[in-house]
Length: 406
Image (cartoon, rainbow, N blue to C red; front, top):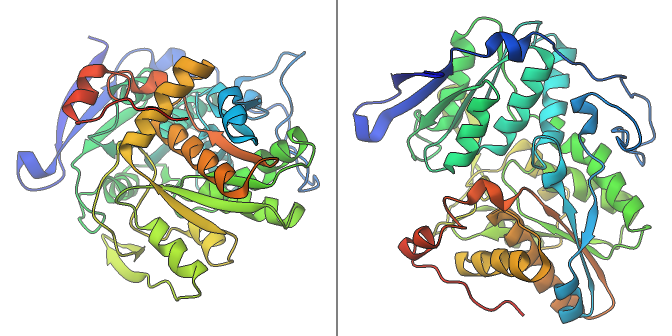
């Protein structure tokens, strides 16, 4: 068979601590025989310019196709709110999500520091999209890849990582304070693997820098500088960390808001900060990693890769500098309803975190009133969630129904 299976014990008991490891044993030569680098190192540019060149009207290596995604107006929602509701079509990156941007920066930072050497292994803890972006980059550059992930993420994302040549390790759904959490498992794998590096998307601020240097300048150019508000969700915090800084520098009056799923500790942290309160983050050491834990409210979300219970270095860039103006919590039923509305009314097929971002944009439009321009990011495609949010039987099992949006 194309794939070989191995069971890796990462904790006591099959139910609480068993991880499933997939390892490609064919196609490796094909995937790694022609590493592609970027055609040029674009350095020394003004921060107001994207360092990722446009790829249309020219031939280009795959990695140079990252970025410069379209900014789409969502007609039904613009008409309903009297505002311009705009979404950055990040599923049009070659790896299919916004995570291609930080993935490239993380790998380049590891190369520049000397941590990642030719033929080395990229290790990362991922909700899927960063893993896909890193797997694509690893294939293009001739690296190996090993990714840990929660066992609950969509099968489509796991399969895509594997088809790009990565090994995947499914980890139990335990709190971040448990050594068997997928984040800690990745750190241990990197430590015991020769010539490997954990690129650390949560704590490595190259993630935020990718959005400061690319996504921000693109949005400013595509709106002609006319942007009143930006809203997005956060997982690593890279998107809001980089974009809040860029937008506040270039357009100080532009509001930046966090859209957060139920059960996440980030919205309460923003709420406290906006109220002038000290955000208490408890420093905790787990498996050699220093974490800044936040108080987690009750609840859970169908959105993958967003909403966590700690303050990462990337999220701190926005939170600690008071670059976030407000927050909102988006329940699962609104995520589902918006996802299907975009699909069936506007022909835009997005995943749950993108649908949540658009809910945030509509709420913000209603709050600001007609005549404003609100921008968000459409993180990935709904095609990665056909077995979950876009499966009627799965929705029924979750007790979720499609409701009216506007």
